[in-house]
Length: 448
Ligand SMILES: Cc1cc2nc3c(=O)[nH]c(=O)nc-3n(C[C@H](O)[C@H](O)[C@H](O)COP(=O)(O)O)c2cc1C
Image 1 (tube, rainbow, N blue to C red):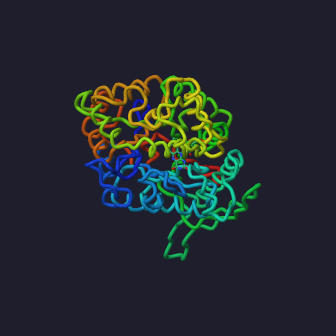
Image 2: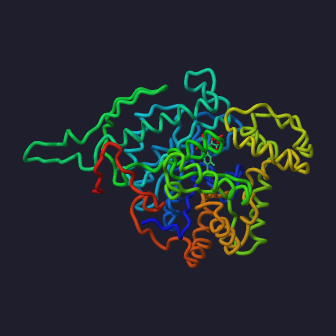
Image 3: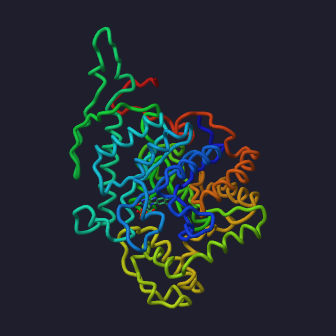
């Protein structure tokens, strides 16, 4: 099942596209984020391209500065059930927050998606990147909890969810009509968890799924974020700025696995990219500038501001050196902030007007704007040089860029033998080359 000779690829579903101005493009459907036919179409397109999974992100507060495709969107877990019944093979991952939910509820919801999809679910564990600074107010709290506290709580949360997912042994339900035995009472387990933040008894009211447990995705890049990844994450999203940085962190994260008695192949790393592909380099660049021209500089700076402590960029002329901006302290999306700030401090030529394109523009990493071969070359390079195990693709304009990627880039990767020509398994774990987890309550485990 595991084939580390090949890269893994996921598609980020964000309605009309990841670019903040995508909805204004002539080809875009502005209500794509709330149009189930559109989203199913994108998931089916990704499945046609043999992608490992599609992913829906989430936040729990919006404001006028939010990306337009996130002010009006589905709850990702509920969306996952619709995507599951409209696809057959592709994995379906969704974000849910440990800061603003209860472990029992989430364990049950993701286990349900895992059954509905027949073993294709994934949970992206977040502590909530609170770009608006407003999330706490939607949950009867007066502030967004401090970063490290959120991660400590997340560790407990994930342990409980994983425990609950193991409530039932794989052969617990015997459905013996003749002897009136619905399930074997010896094979159901309470977790009886008591920690600093939670007390949860269990068992969960749903069986284990075909893949044992949904795959745990995670994206924390700070120290506590990496610890959570090394401790319990299985597929990790990264967003490093360049290949050298990515390589360094790839190894650093893989090295941390041994602290938790885990092996390197128990966790895969997926770098976020926003490629723009076209038949010629010039045509791809034209697509880039077309989106750029649709972007109002100060509107897009408001989006940047969500990552940078909600600093008010409107106070600055666009040609102000970015290093002259005064940034406040950031609690919410800490690692992103620190990385962006370091780039600003180092690159004295960067102006305020450059910031959206530098940090969020399509193809911002060298080489991801170009011909199909150029994009394939760049992906192969990142993968072969162990900067990443695969990619989380944030298509700037959807479905156009997804469709072109599937038709133009995927065949090249397949021809080179570094991406699957067809699915050779049925579950998300099969696709990602991750083992079915051993049930923690079973001592003599045989796979059923
Ligand atoms: C590809 C990707 C997807 C993410 N999706 C979400 C999301 O849906 N919701 C969220 O609150 N944060 C999301 N994040 C942010 C991370 O969870 C995390 O907060 C961020 O990477 C900063 O790391 P830190 O929390 O360790 O500082 C995402 C990050 C990446 C790279």
